[in-house]
Length: 159
Image (cartoon, rainbow, N blue to C red):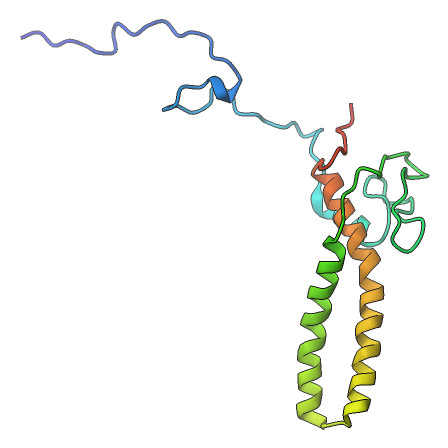
């Protein structure tokens, strides 16, 4: 019985659509969407610039115009900043960080030195409020920098 080569009479390849939705269900997309190096923004430098309360694009202009109000545009590079949606993220992160720093410190200081309760409450109240006031605008800047780097919420790609 003659052998039949199954691959010898394959149909000619048809051009495949770059749209992944047009790919066959059992196959991978023909063209994987690849971002060019020009379009990518490095995330950690933008987060660090935001944490320093600087523009995530240039790193020179101030990000905030008051304690927590983000500027509409960077005064140095004119980057639009009003697209951010930080919402409650900075507050949640502040509570998370302050709680994880102050709770063990409270426990360790109470077990080690057994200070008077009023003294302990006063010291840790001042510490919690001070650390929260320090971290809140910095974490808001870091979140805005992250959103800018990831093109989130309307931060447009540069032409």
